[in-house]
Length: 207
Image 1: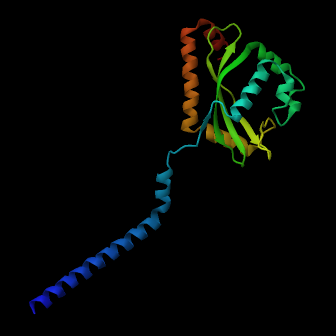
Image 2 (image 1 turned 180 degrees about the horizontal axis):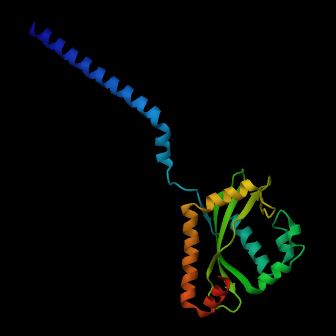
Image 3 (image 1 turned 90 degrees about the vertical axis):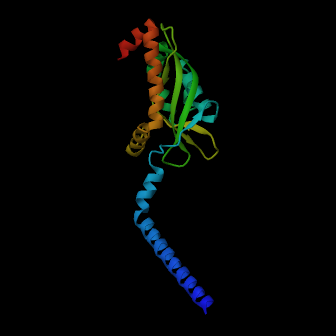
């Protein structure tokens, strides 16, 4: 008799514990459903854009060739690297620039996927050689748009940009990862200003 009473108590206790577990589980499911959007935001908060560093890949080679074309005022090279070669029918601006910035070295490309498939936004950081300046400070060039065609070849898209593309570039330019790259360049330039009078003179004329 005592054994039956004991078994009955154990069964009641197990049923009670199981009921409590089911109620708690149901509560958690409802809570998660109601707050999923907020949870999702927390999971992806401050993750930033995905930046790929390229020091020797296909896009880096493309940008390096383009910059060499600029420094040499080589219209043939420039025309074969872009989607709109007519931009270089008049080389006046390029020739004037090449007299000031004579060389680009140690090029590193920081790449973010574009809004469209097979498009990329490229932030190129390079040491520049400036006529009459002893140091070779870092510079970050205006973002390039690079596209890959059906054959897998990359081109610089130098055509006028639509509003959507400009807004996208502005958006990713404000990303903390991209901003840290700009800061790296700015810090190097300030270091050169403090240590190199020839660059300080050049820098102050610009700013």
